[in-house]
Image (tube, rainbow, N blue to C red; front, side, top):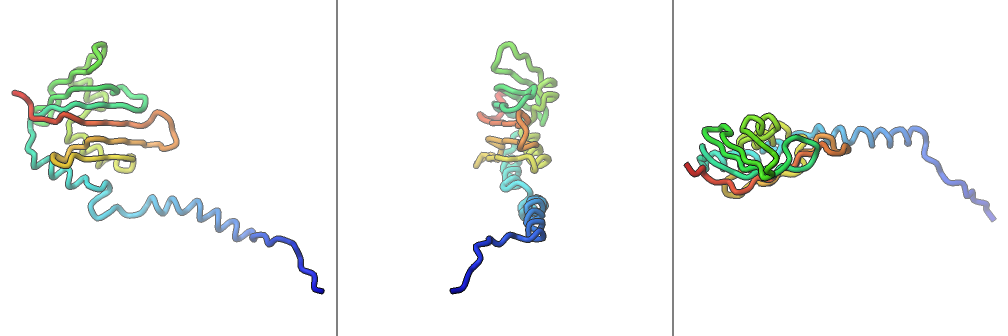
Length: 164
């Protein structure tokens, strides 16, 4: 009768190093993958086209800004004229907000939010665009996925022409 060894085969040192190397390099290669043909954020180009076609030069919207440790957190009614924020009202009575302080705190026009999606596309973890007008209805940015309180979350609602 033949004797068989019960010794388990162990991977070689070379195999272990190659496997570890693959784990380290794979995310880097994936992160460097080219953007899709339509750009770094799916649907952004079409959303910009819809927003431009809507022709809203003077408009108003409600911004809900949440997540993270930032100055711009809360609900804001924003009025825009000729591409500039001209009026802001915060839902919290104790939070006084001027157009200047809104912008300094990271507030934007709708064109500004579309630019934000484009400029910080690597930080975008979620974005949805309005089917008719193209503005971002929701946007989540997370520049450091493993960090706490660095996220930015936005919801834009009630977009309408300004009531002159």
